Image 1: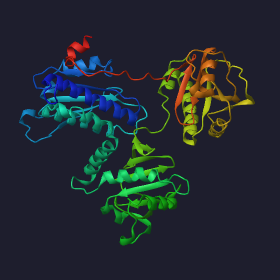
Image 2: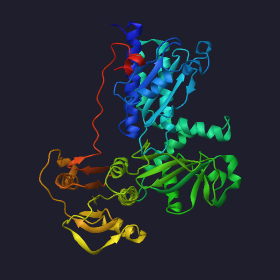
Image 3: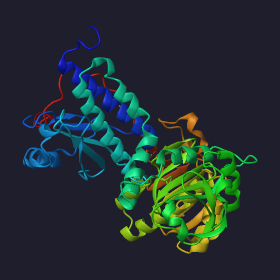
Image 4: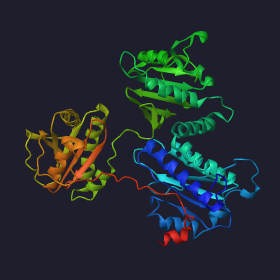
Amino acid sequence: MEAGTINNGSYKNLCLYHVVDGLSAGLSQFSGQSRAALLYAEAPEDPVRVYDPQDLLRGHEPRLKELYLDSSEWRRRGPDTRAMTEFGEMHPEKNLELAGLVSFGGRSRSIFYQMWFTEHHPDTCSIGPTERWLEHAAFLLANDFAFENALYAGSSGYVLREYATHAVRDFLLDAVNVMLGWDTKVLVLPILDAVLAISKTPEEGHKPFGHLVFVAPDDFPGLDFLVRFPRDLRPGVHNYKHVRKLLQAVERADRKLASDGLSIVGIVGGDMPECRLTADFHGGHGFLRFAGEPVCSFSDGRFTSTNRKANLVDLEEMLLESSLDPEAGSSLFRLVKEIVNHAGEEKFGCTIVMDLNEHPLEISGQLLDQPVDLEDADYLGLACSLSKVDGALHIGADLRLHAFGCLLDGHAVPGENLSRGARFNSALRFTSERDSVIVVVVSSDRPVSIIRGGVEITARCELKSFSKLVEPPPALEDWIQG
């Protein structure tokens, strides 16, 4: 069948597939494994349909029924889409705030209602860029439905796969416009390109540290300049090597490089205006902040949503469900989290044995004459340092460090993976033979594994693939019924 001759229904199903596939792939690079799903009604009188090929929305059936089947408010809310005349006009629909999900959508002339969904990852700096990503998916699908040209059916998917920098840009531009007005001339995209390029530029073999702050020109008179460069001799932000050299003047200091988005104006100290965009360089990675709040992180020349802190949600839930007193479980979680985050920041691997037994196990290692109380800040700092020593820390339910440099032994178990190294596989063996023990393994490249009963609790299955649609997605009522 030649391009452009595919029937209308099949063409629209194909568009759905490509947009969801591209959205899921792009968000998976930005935030880790991410599924995507869509609720939509093509015309005002149509039923709501569900396209959820990877079961993202399962478990939310009661709330979706309440919103879309038990009430017609969603149909009445918003503008008359049939009266829209401008090409590409899209009325946004806000996040539904469903637990564990980010959602955003829109209404347009070609598709009466769309609501897009993806996972809300616990380590996300801000959901703002993700919301802009979902909004753009709604815009692209509406255009695809309007054009009905099979030749371009897959192009929207390719756009969404590579949308990370533009999602950050769209979020920041909206935030700047809200603060400074819609006539602002701040060029966000060149700033983002500069931040990524500078982050990859070494100076004498070292990656950059320090703060580069972008401020609106109207706010410069209020800045506390330590050094100011003549207007005609200001280094351009696009001169990445020069900016990288200047960052040496603000490394690990309260000083900051100040820029108007086009050039480096000078070096400043003191308080900064609220409307500011800060690139916080930490060597091999960094954070982008707006008005002091994190937007995303960056490393290896790309933006990601992660706050670069260990995701210990599973561990927290396990401790809450354990036999420990809730207060003791909460304290133990806080102490272990501190040690894990320290290892992540210092980029070394370590192993922590959390012994929940009333009487701690005897584990081969460097025992202490008297276990030390980790609720004492000095001893907690010592434990962070001792976690660098080969072997595991042994922490009891009494919130005390009993030993370090511990050797974890045991018999072979299913699920061992030679590619994961000795720490991981020793933890599998050790926990398989000991009840009431949880082991946290931190790898030097930041992944964290939580292991209990010879099983990695934090293991994630690969997302199941899905094929191109043949039949239209089911109506919400049919989908809920199974």
